[in-house]
View 1 (tube, rainbow, N blue to C red):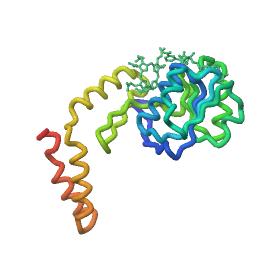
View 2: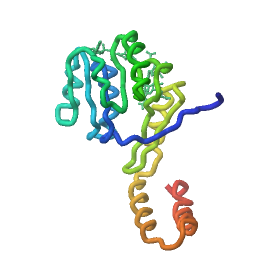
View 3: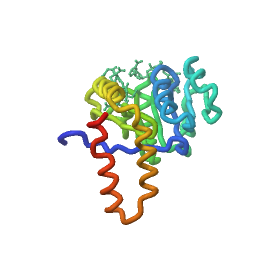
View 4: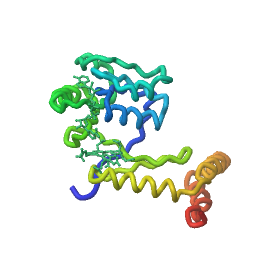
Length: 193
Ligand SMILES: C[C@@]1(CC(=O)O)C2=NC(=C\c3[nH]c(c(CCC(=O)O)c3CC(=O)O)Cc3[nH]c(c(CC(=O)O)c3CCC(=O)O)/C=C3\N/C(=C\2)[C@@H](CCC(=O)O)[C@]3(C)CC(=O)O)/[C@H]1CCC(=O)O
Ligand SMILES: NC(=O)c1ccc[n+]([C@@H]2O[C@H](COP(=O)([O-])OP(=O)(O)OC[C@H]3O[C@@H](n4cnc5c(N)ncnc54)[C@H](O)[C@@H]3O)[C@@H](O)[C@H]2O)c1
């Protein structure tokens, strides 16, 4: 396969039932990434020990459930997405095929071959969100591209989006005519900024 075959989607994590197994460094990173995108994210965390940092991160989020005990098979019931982030790779190998059979999409810390999906590096300017993937080749490069885009994207991006929405709502005519006008309005945006 040449190039990056991953299909990007943007998930509504406030209406997704997410299970994170493991509450150490990596578990905290994954929960942090979910909450940074949407503080309403619906997450259950099950871990033998949940770190003080993770407890603090979710302290003001009543929709997050903390289960401080070892993983049990029933924990998979009703989940949509699964993150495996324990320090026990054997446990991950065991859980993954069962999760797959039950139709769950799984991300396994540090184990690309067991992942159904990867997390991307994300850039956010108001309503604009850009997801970056290097197909697992270099998360460090993804981070650098994120920093570059954060720096270079104009500060008026949200204003432009709001204006475009207004223009779009006001425009009469068929879709083709609308696209023509909206293309015209945005043509020089990045060049001017
Ligand atoms: C988006 C982000 C979210 C997150 O998960 O935090 C993310 N990694 C981030 C950072 C980061 N991760 C690592 C470093 C250290 C330096 C380096 O290795 O480059 C840095 C950089 C840093 O921290 O500066 C270590 C690492 N990561 C993976 C492996 C395993 C392997 O490659 O085999 C190892 C080696 C572990 C080891 O050797 O011990 C694997 C994955 N990491 C991914 C995502 C997926 C691919 C995304 C893509 O295609 O680009 C994938 C495949 C699976 C997944 O995790 O979903 C976040 C983006 C940065 C940001 O936005 O700030
Ligand atoms: N620490 C890093 O910088 C880093 C970076 C990339 C990948 N990794 C990998 O990610 C994995 C997790 O690393 P970490 O640093 O988060 O480890 P950690 O020791 O900080 O956390 C492990 C977590 O798993 C929980 N756990 C272990 N067995 C369990 C079970 N049976 N049921 C429920 N919870 C259980 C522990 O209680 C703890 O909360 C490791 O495989 C590691 O190699 C670590």
